Length: 255
Image (cartoon, rainbow, N blue to C red; front, side):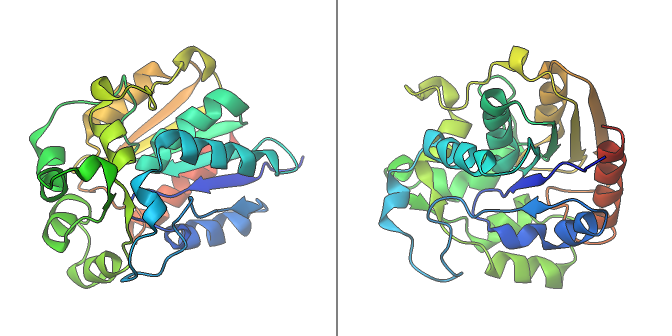
């Protein structure tokens, strides 16, 4: 039986390169993998932001990803990390994929939880005038504290160096869905009946455990839920990457 293709969706301030380790492992098991860069995410680290990032919203990312999914030869399993986990749910609602893998999923309109840690992580952005209509880039100190906690220091610094600009409007839609006229992160969970794997580190500070638990409760299909002890938001370094890969392989084999 042919194995479904995998569509990977990266997170905020990120690029498809974060998936390289997982793609290598899953391609070796016979899965075709596809990891597109979200619109205006082709820039190299240190480059100025694309001016269009000040206008891009969740709906633009979703439309792009729906088009990407339509180009695959069969229904994929969608794998998303962080913001990509939020986008994966919106894309799944519209495309009905073979499965969902949500890693440290970002909040939708009905799964966000209030917490000091997420607010502290993005505080340097949300105190800037008009941040919701500008490109944004998290500063090193807050990235180190809120995204790369529990990651070895040398690797964390390299990953921080690799971050790029993203959309303030998308961050606003995720962080303040009640104030978003477009209701961009609203998901009809009755349509998410496909099997799903939800994984989160118990020390995640930017998309905390409460969001992952709320997501697992909302999903309408079979859900495999995993909390990784002593792990933060970043799941792409060993030994965490190996654990993440093993869980994804087990989930895919069970489809």
